[in-house]
Image (cartoon, rainbow, N blue to C red; front, side, top):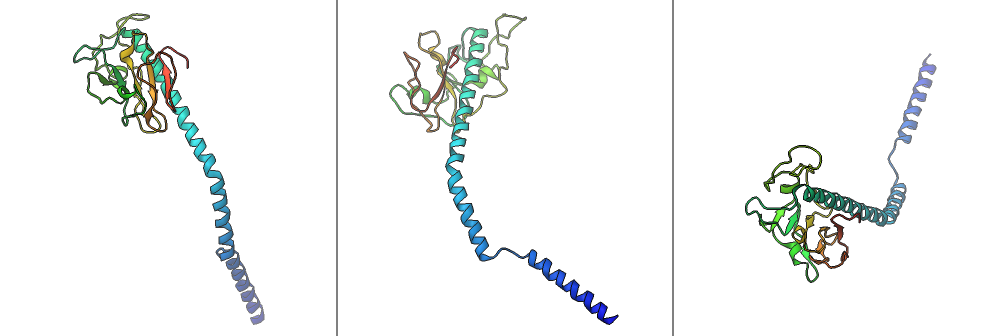
Length: 211
């Protein structure tokens, strides 16, 4: 009986040692190989990941620009012309939230104008709320008047800068542009254009255009 107990004990100890052996940590060699492999994979994948992130941001900005372009066109159709509640004057520039852009070429300084509530106003005041003071639409169909809110909120572009629209050129023959300054945060498109042509990495939409 004693021999049987000793045999069982030896088997139990062997099992414990075997299990501990299987659960031991990685050796220095195994850890080194694993870290080297991870380093190679990270170095190989990083450029692809960054390219993907860059493309995703550009696609997001292009989508936002098209939404804002379409929404501003609808607002203009509803109210005929934009105005400030304080002065009754048409603003020159509408901007969203976010950092102010930098002008980078001749004729682009007006895109970087500071918010003043008169010449430069928030898009939210026209598209989300009716702080601009438009008469509200009465009736249905094609009746005129503010029919918003047209958006839940005006977004910030994927690089943290504001979207902007040179709405003050409406009716002058120059194209009304909705713009993101792109990844570099610098506007490379003149405020007034004779020809619809974006500059640099700017992402722009033309009011009434499907571009």
